[in-house]
Image (cartoon, rainbow, N blue to C red; front, side):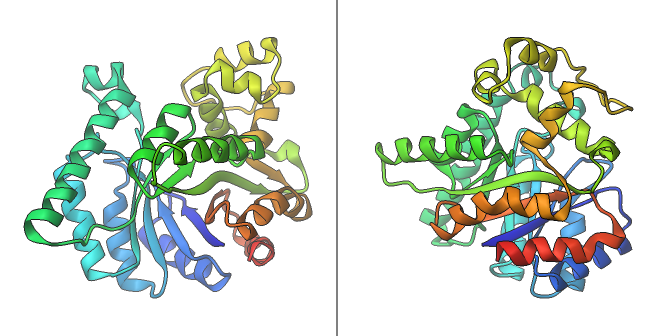
Length: 310
């Protein structure tokens, strides 16, 4: 199984280099770098890491066609792919709507995202047909809902499933099987989820909470109910503030964290990941990506988790 690790965007350039080198040493195959311009630029980070860390793959994880034009995304991707063959992948998603000024995009993010994906694929096709150049790197679309899932299955080779819930994984695999009935297109499923290694779940990271909150709020009521949440719990999730919270709440609402993400001791995490390892051995999934809540003294524990999956 290909195992990826996202890199904390708050790190300095030097810290990111050290993080990537250590990740490679413990068995990580790819680094996924988030994009949040102008605070952070994934392409600048990747360019620097390519020159300082050898034999490691890098993905934008994720960037958005709303941050750059698709022509810029295309050009940067081809440049990386040609200069570092087999080591770069473009991960795309809707992105952070809070930094998008265009009101029409904010009103219909998915429809506009689909249009941009269609434009990008058209540019790729023209280059292949008119210039006989087949040099665009692997492309992934990230998301969780059925619309984004179906778009990925119809258009790209990789779907970054924005959840590490077994329920969501199995729902995605069923959806993929249904899509294969209507055409020959096959798509790799890559689950992505936040990960915190701790023996005390009451020490939950605020970052972990806010990301899980955002994921849960992005789900439809149908998906939330399918997760087994009561109508009352679904309502609580829908009422969570969209803005970043500065304190982890108390009560049952925090159970969404260990549904869409993973928090627990090393042993508890390994137990949770047994199903994912089984699906990998059965070729149902091709990889997994962790958004690790970084702790400098936990590299050895993360190494054991990685070794188990491999």
